[in-house]
Image (cartoon, rainbow, N blue to C red):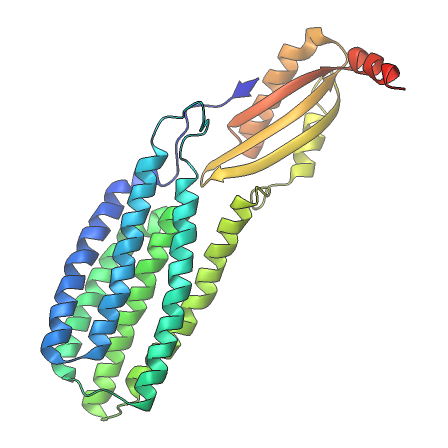
Amino acid sequence: MHGGGSIGTAGAKYKRRLAAALTLTATYMVAEVVGGLVTGSLALLADAAHMLTDVGGLALALLAIRFAAREPTPQRTFGYMRMEVLAALANALVLLLLTVYILYEAYQRFLSPPEVLSGPMLLVAIVGLAVNLISMALLAGGADESLNVKGAYFEVLSDMLGSVGVIAAALLMMWKGWVLADPLIGAGIGLFIVPRTWVLLSQVVHILMQAAPAGMDVAAIENRLRTVPGVVDVHDLHVWTLTSGFDVMTCHLLVTDLVEARAAIRAARRIAKDEFGIEHTTIQIDDQILRAEESELHV
């Protein structure tokens, strides 16, 4: 028997905020490209390329939410809910590749620092910082609930750090004439992104491996289900996360009498939902007498 409400995703309620962040980021990306061409700043052009990945990540996140909202089909019984997880995986991989690119660019600029108009570069970077902070504020709440939104949030976070780095480099070049500021700060930004991206990637892999949700004590669930009146054993218990905010549990309950089956199922569902936050459950009842008879036949 199945339990739980309609299928939904944790990221869906942040769709409008993602769209707003996408609009802001795409608009500023165009402005940054123009600013980079006008000032001759390779740092701004590189940051524009960085923002292009943000645009792609945000668009992918919105696309994933749209697919996740589609109704299930006979071939896809859970619909497209895993699209959010796959989008988060794509974002994590893009961020790792972007980090490699940043470190490579930092090395190239260390060998041959570019000449830039630091004043206009500073103004464009300050505008970019404001845009990124607004986008981060829009996505901050959803980052704690949805891996998909978290991936988009990290995209914007990484670009915010890029803007800070460009501002710092511009100030150092203006005040100190230190041309190596740009590649050194760029490398620092790349290294800062890595651990956060690794955490996101680890969470995605954890879900795709259908491991128990983080912080979920499966042994405690089993022990609690054994206390249900009429239940003498629990087996084939599986708990996993389908997508952010949607955990699933399946199990077999061995009962002494099939008359108690309905009450046992209701109690097990209530325990899963109220005590462990699992709303979607599939519970199969096994009869103790019938199972014993089947065991004797196989002796």
